[in-house]
Length: 289
Image (cartoon, rainbow, N blue to C red):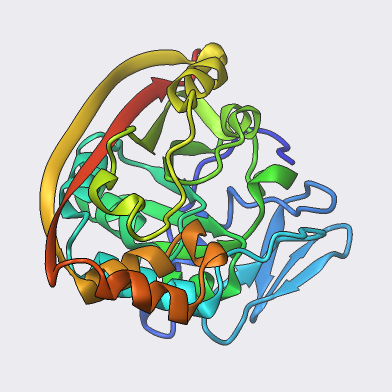
């Protein structure tokens, strides 16, 4: 989808405020033809005539032909509740510490919670790439320097070749070949994945989806075209109430495998407060060149 390496342009003022979409516009590419965009009023358009209107909530949906609906509104609300309580704050802080300035894209970035911390730490600009329109509505207001862009990583990333300084993935699909294409030479890719003991105290009792075997090996295979910068493990314990646990289950893929009655019965069977292990691996890679 890229046509030449570009860098994010300084944002213009729109209505008295800096627009994140203006800032990332130079890097965005049409998902149909790969052409560059211009912004006229509330419409993105390319020279070939493809047009994409900005939603009134502030995001633009470039997920052409995607069959992935992403998270439901209920899942997004649960995620916002859980993350807003600070339960994964050490993970977010560790991600921000590994970030580099410039244009950042959070692939599968959900509500923009993680990317907001990244751009706040680096002073750069960012774009959440996310298939869920419910999540995009939240991401569009996550941070003044974060744009919300609808997209499906399996169909490519709607950014120009070599236009991105940082790509982040937090418990999300990756698309290594697409990441390699959009990263500038020397650009950084930071991936957060769960370790086997992540949430081990509650996964079984609450019927949650487990951590897939061989996850680390698959990631290392995807990194063959990158230079490995470093890999660290982060572990800590958080005390979750039943309401915290309810949000935890409903914000992720486990939500597709339970219903309200079954979840309530499981929650009633656990203590009022549970100490839970949070365990993740942070992998940092660099695009060669």
